[in-house]
Image 1 (cartoon, helix red, strand yellow):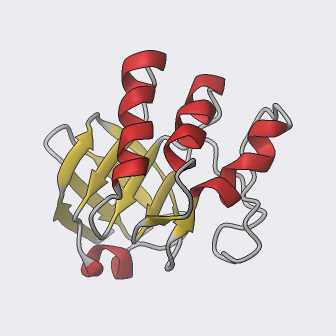
Image 2: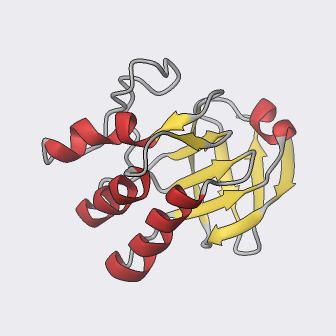
Length: 150
């Protein structure tokens, strides 16, 4: 099994091994998470029809690998809300720089909800091109992300 290592900037740290879900385009946080949050669902099912990489997939507990988040000013609030519900992804790994609204939601969820969500950005385009759906990802405390070719 081949491994590829990437080093990013830690937004919300932690250590984790899990399965990846990959979006090659920016994720609209509100459109992706809001329907499940409003329904008080037990898991997040991607609801943004404009993102075929995530639409209809169970995102709870997954490691979402993406370039960046896009969308409205409510994006941080939606992230914090799903973390408070305990149905959040386990990590968001960004090839680009995280936007400030997503970062604020993740940080508030860590502080207010004691959420275990991990966020690392600036992993680079090679990272996003290396990871596939269901790849096993290992995240280290120092911001190292290891992609295993399963």
